[in-house]
Image (cartoon, rainbow, N blue to C red; front, side, top):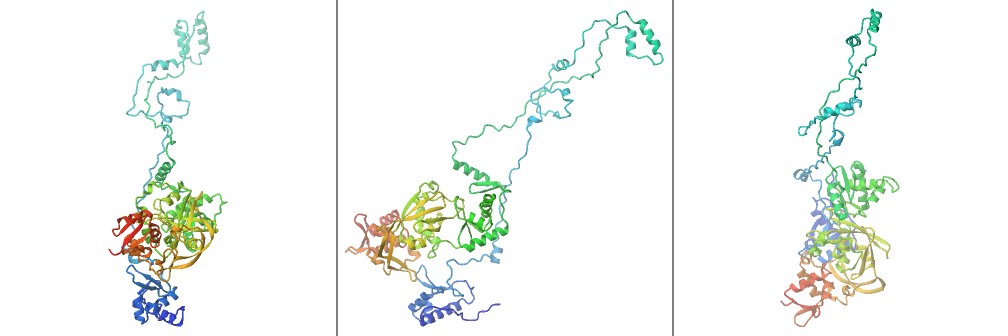
Length: 619
């Protein structure tokens, strides 16, 4: 049994006073979570902790900021700041751990009984009826005596019609050899009797003498005797033909689109358990390469070790040790995709040209400053009035985009109407995300980017461009996204310029406030989206809005007027549409159409694009 020995010794950063405050704060938090697990989040308001330690909030915040690897500060929707840590002295993760092995949960909520698989229709092999039945010809039983029973006569069915033809006797008589024509002279009775009845052996010589003496002058002609057995006369049986199954003419699919044929085949093959189908390819299940439980465990561990999704070809070569030169390489790749798709712990996050696989507990790609669900809620306006079934995916080859401050700060790209035309649709019906590779030729780097597909309540967006934005771009930079032959690989380029220096807007991570920092950049920017100190000095020292305030567009518009508007002399704030559009995209993404609609509906805002918009703060 392990027992808590009291205070935990950690090495804190800062001055002596800062270290003392940090150690005292950690001991208080650890005592509060004495009966909690080592990884559970311990959460206490900053004001209450400072009051308990009898120090100021500024001194406590300094100690927390110097030891960011032990403490984290989080502000809720009501603006209350909390300090977070764990019993082991680490910053808690962004997602609370899930107790997937709870005995009570398994007992109270058992897994639903799986639906039975549809039983395939059993095919019955039938013999061509023409092989077993004579149809339409005359059957003459005597003609098949020398065929050694090669054929058999079938009994007529009840529904068959039996016809008796009177010409049968004549037909049989024609087959008997005709008798020779002779004179109508009848033989003597004695001669006929001798021929018919032979004499005894002992009187042979005497009988011969008598026969010679009694013979007439001219011998009589004896008619030949037919020794063949009499052929019985059968009635001719004629049977009506049974209805035969015809394959008919081949179906013409010339005018049917290929996509419709593929969808029909996919729908049909998905109902057959003996056919393995994945990604537009299929084969019989017994021929698909099978994965053992050990193979599946090794694949899962390898993905977790790499901490990122991996392609099927990488898994086949690195885990299953099958090279491309192997004749069974294509079969192994198909089998891996088919069997992993049936596993619950694996998630397909690829495309037809680049098939990525991930596991359920793999951390998401991209920023940790905001949860993906919150980002999806910010982009919800992208789904208004858009029918996903009418989008022509992969219909364009290039899209130009200007990076806003919101996108630059979180490493995002919106999945708007133009992006939907550039990127492919989900390959699987239940696919929630897809991983693409973005190649940056100007920096010789490639990034994994995750696309979260839109849902009825959340918009779609790209994650994972944080490092690229921070290293090469600034808010307002213009980029171009180009498609390649593979639907999973894209190239991103920006306009390279001479180095420029300016004081640009940034967010202080230690405390949620905006400030301007001297920045040197060498990329082409759109001046309408560039946020520098000369244009927006009112952002300096402003706090970031809470999640509750950011959800209301009207509140964000009013706060933006207070930050960028100028006094019109009548108690109102005046701002141009360009300034409002660039500034409002600091807190949350807003399109031009959405901003114009909000400006028109707001009762305290008047004006137009030519003269600017005025917000009457007095009302």
